[in-house]
Length: 404
Image (tube, rainbow, N blue to C red; front, side, top):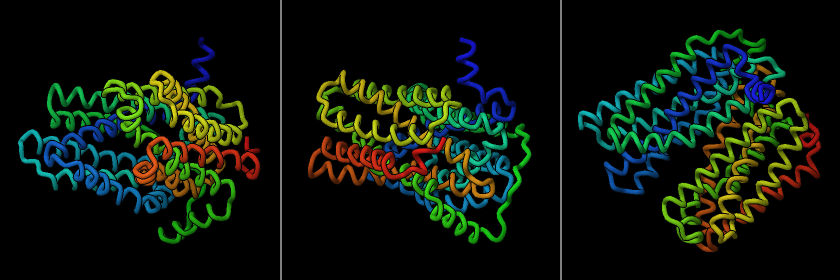
């Protein structure tokens, strides 16, 4: 048992990474509570599903449009300081919005300003988080550290929205944003004690020149444009089942909100276990095979899930969907971390992080297909495309397939 735990949590032996990981736990918990609390607040203020979408767009615009700028700055500046500054501004925003709610002065435009600020801060924060990792652990522990970092996102995805719901029920939405402030401030306090020595390698020239150099680097390297392409493709076509899950729960599996919640929980538990499997296998190698086989299996399971009419079978399938999706994506993240030049890390990993923000676009595509052909067809089509791309990679992308 001791050997198992030491392999699972090897990265936590290093002081800087422990501080980073605990701060990550606190900040990602705040993010997941924020998403639930903001949606609840918007609906309270407007009673409009359309305004929920507007708030999402306002968040996404700076998040998507400035990620390359954030990545370029991460490659030029102190990454820890960027994380501390952006998280401090987020904490301040949580506090201000919470106080506006508690004093009954909040109006809808306040929420839009908050959402824009949240997206803006994360466009600079996310690339720095990814790029700081090799400064905290030795190269042989990077794979384990990547997986442990991914496990934080999956654990908070399970706990955060439910905790926000309980806090809203017990204390109100204003106090929930105050809780987000406390959680975010705790991350700032932990990250303030990280002490790292920047790796050799700084980009030359201005920010715009750095951005173009990063894009050109990806364009010229098959390994990197293939991995980023696989991730984008998965976000656009594979993850559409998350957006359409209410349709499956209500109209196909014919379960109530409790059944819908179980589907989400089984997916989250599977994803969490998938990241822990990658952490345990950190030294096993053959990561290219993990990526491509994981993609093919994920797509195949998605096709099976699309046409399942059994709730019990769907629970099992969605558990393994979460598991293989995380094996696939965490392995991509690990390969990028291990093979990127230090002076390009922030820009390329910023692009990797951006792929998560493509999910709403994928949801719009699958929703349009579902409107005309039905939700099962939309999800099965996405699964087929993801599986086909994984198999194509096995056959035609030796650069990815053979990487250890």
